[in-house]
Image (tube, rainbow, N blue to C red; front, side, top):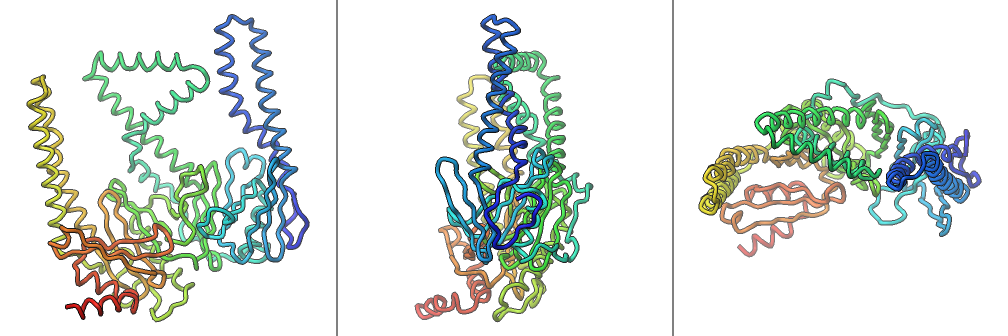
Length: 525
């Protein structure tokens, strides 16, 4: 297929022929380490310059030629077609495969293009059913032309190739949000990551000896003047980390746009590598606000979708495809999450519940109106912090008798001395994060210290309850109530809630689901 829109019932079509050229360019990533290793090997054996150049050129040509031959063979062996009922794909050079997806089961069409593909006007298309089965839930067309990929997306999701009438963007990138990028682990680990990556790259091209010499020189410089070099290294690490975080934010979220199409959410982002995700609103089972500790202290948050069939990206990718936004102001995040939760609820059978995330009780995704948990929940956390500090103090006391150096004995008390105030602060912060509410359509729960999670679950999507009670919870009159749902993490917890409040919450959230068990408990009493 080249330059034509995907026609229903069309004959078997090929992938984009330009992919051969893109494969040739990408093969240069294999040429560089191979030629580097060959150069190091030949130079050590006193080869003439002409022979070294000829051998290196031959290796480069063989690698590029091999990649091109494979690309042509794959192109000739791969066919796809779109019929009135199914999307079909035939592929495989040595082992032939024929896979298909019914069109009425298509739930997402994701588009992705790295910088090389974008130069050639190509896009990888991933068509998913939203199911979690190992096979048959996704077809990948790698690649199509950009025009054909967009036309196929519209045909599969909207039934025609005409561009859908959008309702305008829900949110677009503001570059002022880049200030939230350093509020992560990058400023702490940035230089280490860069140095580790550089060392691996030098080792891959045969320059391990040079890398070892550079590492030894750096270590000698640090140990010679530690009072000067250690602060400089910490400052350099923070600077590199901040720069890396900013660059990663720009590449991942550049040109970000989240918009609504009829019955769907579409997310587009990526400065160099373009990514596009289309999510059916009827797959939504809730929304989550994620606030990591540093980001929370800076007033930022992220919004994630709780939907069927979402999780990690494809094998070999680490991105969380449920993330709908970059780090952005907390008020914007909660406003967007409330809008998504309310509009998503409109695409589910309402049953006996009124729509609207803030109906009935007035509780919203933003946390307004959440019911605080009992004082016993805070007491449990404070006790844990005190016990941890006491254990660390005991270990430090024992270690001070075992350490032979007098100057080092004082340092073993640093950890327990810091553990007490930090632990108490985290305990109070964790207790403040606890909360829950029941709105007209949603169960809202909040918890977490290192990462605070505020979750609004569609009550009609809850399929079961799990009530757990540890020994210490039982002594404090607390339970953890977990809502089971076929989306996201599979279950979401209301932690350390009063026993009566927790059971009443579960019973009210999904009427008649827990009532039989509560009736039996009353009979036993």
